[in-house]
Each structure stands twice: as structure tokens, then as C-alpha cells.
Image 1 (cartoon, helix red, strand yellow):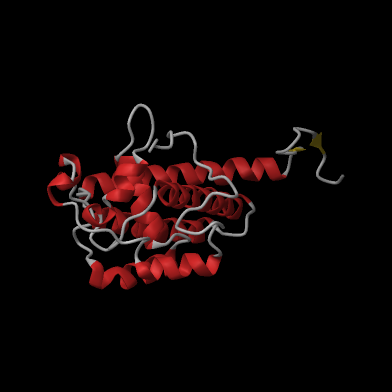
Image 2 (spheres, rainbow, N blue to C red):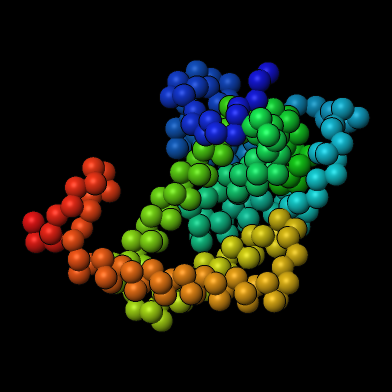
Length: 222
């Protein structure tokens, strides 16, 4: 089975990601999230690749805490635990020619303790594409909120602090060891960037506007 190249994030509209003939509905996605996977298979034992056996992320979460992890993510982000785990795996199992979708799907229970069943390569690709789409939409929503002058500088700092804390927690659960100095440096850089965003957006709101679709420039009063 051929793996999907790294730059092919989309899934054909008629692609089957599980065992049927239609793409899953939102209700199907919810059900699959709660079941932790797709079609179960027997353990592959000695057939498990060496890099899969050595993979040591997500060891702080097991199957019994999957729902807690999923609830945490749903309360604070747009992504599910399934999308979070698979997006991380797609980043870690990326090669020069693409993402190893087949390896990820076949060894999902070995790679992530709270995922109990295997996935098809198409299902892995769909979860990755869903993650990317949500990140892009969340990024656009946040940036608009920062640029539209809805938040004061102090309120925007609070939003960034909360977002940073959630992101750091997820990284720590994945197994990333964050030094205090690195955390403070990252927070300072983020704060500096957001101050620049506020300054530039203020200038933009009082100048001519460019359409993001066609590039047409027009005055705010048009």
C-alpha cells in the first residue's frame, strides 16, 4: 500500500476512511473518537518495527484516561485526542518522500497508549487533514480577534498566556521536557510579536484596505 506524500493533505470526497463506502458523518466521527480507533487487529508482536517499539511519546496517558484527555482538549481547543495524537505521529514519522501513513495506522495502539485499534492509511490522512484545517481556522479567528481591536493589550496578553499554558501542557504530556528558561523566552517572543500585530493592525484599520481574495484596494468608506 502506497503512503500518502507529505504535501497531499486532502482526502478525496468519496474516499472511504473506514470500512464503508461513504465518508463518515460528524456523528460517526464522535463515535469513533469514543471508541479510540477503527477496525481492531491482532497484535503484531515481533513484526512491530524497531522505531515503533522505541517510540516513547504519550506514555503519561493510557486507555483508561482517553476520555479525560479528549474532554480536556474539547474544553480548550478545537481538536480531539485522536487528531492530536495522529498529527504528532505524522510529524514524527515524516520522511523525505512523505508521511508513513501505513506504519502509523497499522501500529497505532503500539505508538499511542490511549488508542486501542488500528487505522487505515486513509483514516490517518483524514485525521491529519482535519487537524490542519482546524489549526488554520483557529489561527485566522485568533488573528482577527487580535487585529480588530476587540481586546485591550492586557486582555490579549491574558489570551496568549492561557493559550501558551495549554500548548505547553500538551507538549509535556507528549513527553517534551520544557526548561523554565526556554518557556520564559518563548513567552517573551510571543508577547513581542503580538505587540507588533496590534501596532500594525491599528495602522491598517486607518489606512486603505486590500481584498485578500483579488488584491483590489479600496477605501474603508467604500
